[in-house]
Length: 616
Image (cartoon, rainbow, N blue to C red; front, side, top):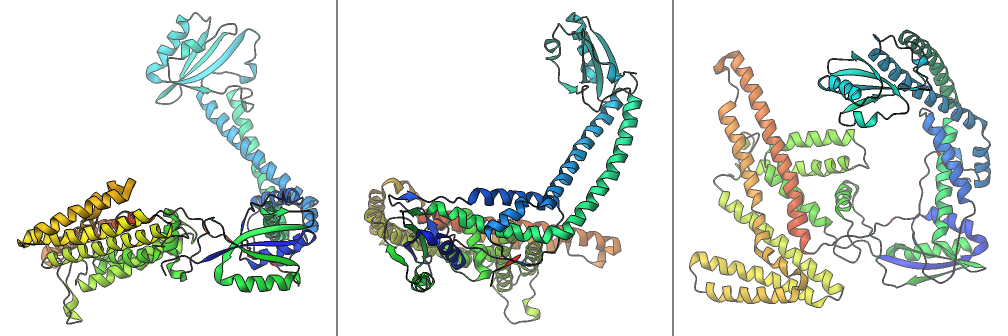
């Protein structure tokens, strides 16, 4: 349960002239994660990959222009025929032509909008942009802050650029400065001290007077609207006829691209090619049997035992896979180490439930997390985080029942004889329980670390984990003896110091971590702190702002609003702390004892058909 799926690396030899059919078989099996062979043999290259990639780019481009349609499945087409169809398709050319024209219209619209805006700046100047061509003069237009406008004009005059300036209020904040100056001179030094927005007066859309420009903008936009609707209609017709076919082509090309690209992992001689990869150990015999059957025994298979790190594969029920997603987001577990995900699955909801510890808040967080899962992408972090939150909310409801908390009210007595524990009266007991829980998890972390280090041959580091456990246990006895005045306090204290020194000597570079032997278990006391704070705040809200008609209708409404808002804020704070601290206790206090991560996720050479069918 605490290890990832055992993996086996294999090496297979096949006849070179059967490569395409073998690759197709392996692709269909979807069980092998290829690795590039280290054998000193020739590399295999696919001659079909460039043409497949070009065809795939062409199909993706066409699909990107069309609107999505319902896709009907079609049978798989041979690679050569498929590439030829895509390359010679006249309707794809037509889609690209229409798409290019759409982009041109969009670019024109941006230019027209700019021309319309600039025209507003020059509306009172009477300038004809078509006449701004001269062999002697250059022209520039800038927008200056109102406070700087006069300084800009004075700077131009002081530079003796032989220029004329026209200023006009463009809006409430900026002033237009239009400058005509001698081409033989530079104006940049004069303008550099100011923050100015330069206007592109050479834009192809600025031709003629302001009135002529605005009229041209109006007519061009009318033409664009008409042409745009015509293009949309044509694309809709093309999509209705060909979208399904293109989507199927895309799927087939992606499959063929995977098969062609896989060849880069192979090695070859003149007559055979070599494939290496990883597969689940438990599927090895079945896979080999099917492989010999497919090739009619024209292949060779052997197990490879080298030092390469095996890829990581976990098999967990579907509703628990979001925990695996979060673990991968943090770091993929290594296949040669303990996988802590099951501990995370058990402990995180407990931490969250205790820190929220209110059935009312738990129900609301369950509803909210469920809503998020229905609105987000199942492959994204929001969805998977919400699924973990959803499961943890059930724990919050359970602990809310145990502590008899329902939005701060105690309600168990109305439907059961179980009154639950009291966060305030039983605070000392809860504190001890959380510290014990921390001790158990920290010691478990050291046990896992012992297992990992011993398996890798790091004997001294492994033994230091055992002495760490003894240091903690002996230290607990010594501390207890100190508070109770027991005579065994001194010998146990001395023994703890000796074990601490031994641990530091054995740990090597990890010796700096020995200070955490006591502080990390105590860190679990935060469960009490956040849980108690949430419960007390909820009770204070109830005592001060529970709605009552004693204050009249307006008072009842006002108190209701305040009651809901304060409980909402307290709930958000409790949920936030429960999620953050629940993750922290696992990833910092627990994982830091043994978890290195950095594994390689198992990615089998496989495919899934949605829009196409296998040929019969």
